[in-house]
Length: 607
Image (cartoon, rainbow, N blue to C red; front, side, top):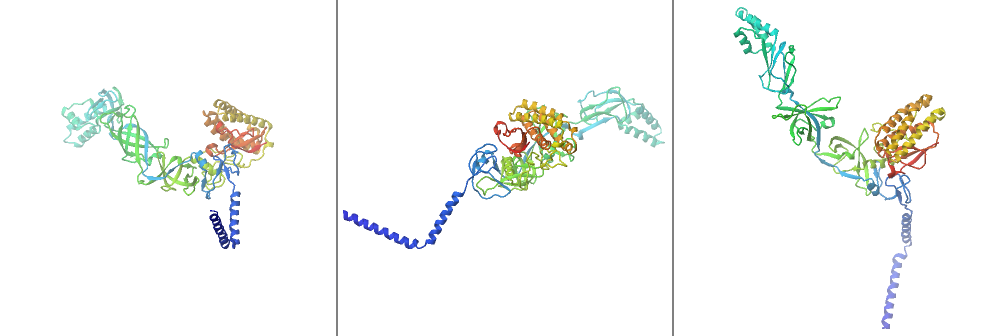
């Protein structure tokens, strides 16, 4: 047993020494290769150790730190940024967490036949082609009325009234006299007959006068068509002149329904479209009509065009001047494969339409800034004629937040289509708006640029500074009321602010100071008044943004009796950013209440 064990040991040692020898033969003689492998391992290890992780804020992606912590703007916990492929100036990349917090949602662009449900308001009217007016063909006095009220049904040829006319009596006498000379002077006879015919007497009536040989003193007026008397303009005993309207008669077996169509809907409406409508007097009952005419002229006051439809009305249920609510389900012609996107995907800059398209080649949520050309709107959708292809994914929810992130990172955005810093004004609250933007603008400056205001504190009288200080105190009270979202408090402080502004004596200023005040006061007064009149916290906050702009500039130029801080929040004003004044370095955001009380930063100090 011992012998076997020793033999096994010897065999094992033999294999061990053999393996060592082979290893030395193959690898031991290549010291350069071994050194290279060792260096590569060291370099990889050094790279791994030197690669620091970047941390950012989900709501403020411009924040970049090399260690975890809280966002210095909003206080949220920072999240790591994963390494990814490089993005260009037209693309904005967000972390997964940021996309979830911003609730970014996308939809796929599809081709199809866009349809739109158009709601129209209108009224029932008589068919103008079936309306006739019965007029007096000769002057006279109404002796008898056979139709006594409006709405009475009449038939063609039915007597409406009886009239006595001295002129007609004289014309009959001339006819009887002309009959005596019919053979010798036929032209005289023909002239007398023609005169009576021009006064609407029939051949039968003229023949009866000749046969009887007597003058008829009263003549009947007959209806020219069957229908409803829509207007009776005379009473018994009235004297009427030639051509005076006596009755209006309309045949209501077919009526019109005239609808008001706005310019944006006209592209969807065409002749032959079916309109389903209802009237308030018959709830639950619907009628169908057909578009027969679209007014070629837009009403300059109402900015609408009349769309006329026709509908049969044999039972007389539809009456003139009834209100109607119509619906058209329409398709655009020659647009069977049109691309459509939700309205919520589009950002309007006044001059262009912008969307954000998801880039599929990145792992992280990455969105490309893209300008598009839009066609007609189709309900909650827009038709896209240029800029997108079927299969593209566009942001449908959270597009403002994506654009705000692009602005903060200096990417191409709605406010900065060429890239670079977002156009939020200068760093003290000027906030000049891009031309074409639909947000209110400050009064344009002529002598003073927004970025740098002149120091005019020495040119401002002490009395004006004291009055301005009252304005600032009321402004700060308004700001605190907005922080607490107290509608009663903000109402009181906005009233005090407007009163303090009214007491500012601009006539005490002169030179550049007076010019500067004149430039700013209109915008300041306007939005202070709107802030006072707003009946919601949201309305007051919106106008607080715009009244803060000129007040910050005035305080910067004229000085103040206390130390003030110019604060900025990038999330306010629909992620366009907003400035405000504070007498404390501590951030107390007036735009979001307790939810984001500390969101913002101090941009400058006014001593």
